[in-house]
Length: 221
Image (cartoon, rainbow, N blue to C red):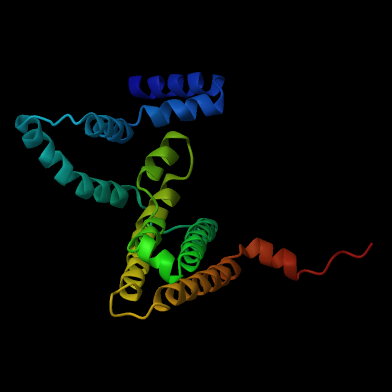
């Protein structure tokens, strides 16, 4: 009861503040972000951690990924409603179609021999960076802001599988033995398939009420 009262009081205080200040405060107070900033500052300054600190932090770093996957599994809700599935399909279609389009544009712009010699492995590396899955921190943000946390967990979980497939395509098409046209062709094909599947899902997952409204004839005046 005390925890619930404290949570309600915190929500009330946040409701009185501007939305941007509440969001900024939560982002800046996020422990992984603080850790990344501190690590970057130490790397820039050339400060090395003592061996005792490394022995303490190494098990935590190794446990990070399994704990994130465990948290996703606990929050994930695989029996989503039709509306949630439609939103999930729209989110993933938008994310990957934009990422594939940007990656394809970059690969085409750097397709000349001179540009390829200058950029080298940056061409497939940028494509891989753009095709990374939905970050798991989205689940924490959705829960803290009162949004659909199961939908966010489903987006993070399903995007891991999709990103794995896209990364395999990029790795195969960017192999040294592959022709130069393999990478842009693979990205263009993946973009077309993504848009096609996304449009089919959007049509198939239309809510039944909306379908009935579209099929029913307009009332005559």
